Amino acid sequence: MEHCPEDVEQRADIRYYKIGHSSAEIGSLFVSIFLKYYSKEPRKIILDLDVTDDLVHGNQEQVFFNTCYGGYCYAPLYIFCGKHLLAAKLRPSNVDPAAGALSELQRVIKQIRQQWKNVEILVRGDSAYYRDDIKVTKV
Image (tube, rainbow, N blue to C red; front, side, top):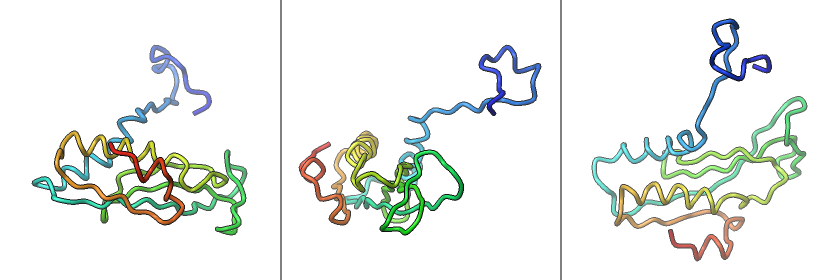
């Protein structure tokens, strides 16, 4: 990948291709799949926030030792609604568990509200997420 050409014109002359992506489209994909699962708008949904460890081996970027998990790891943030994954954000393990949670919640809820105007949304998480900016925010 490090030797991939930067412009498309050179691609015919090389066997390696850089794979492009759209972070916004990837981020919205999980919520889109979730919304299509329902044939009609539910009355109420519960969004669960959680963080876990993703142990790594070697010298990965942004890896730190986390005493809670007892190893070198990342600490990804997840948002689920039941069995449906709505967001997965890879983060270093030396951040506050609630870091980035508000912006991810706002993004997910905004996308849900575009299709479901009247659904009641309850956000649930452990005490790490009990923050003034999260508990009083309306989206």
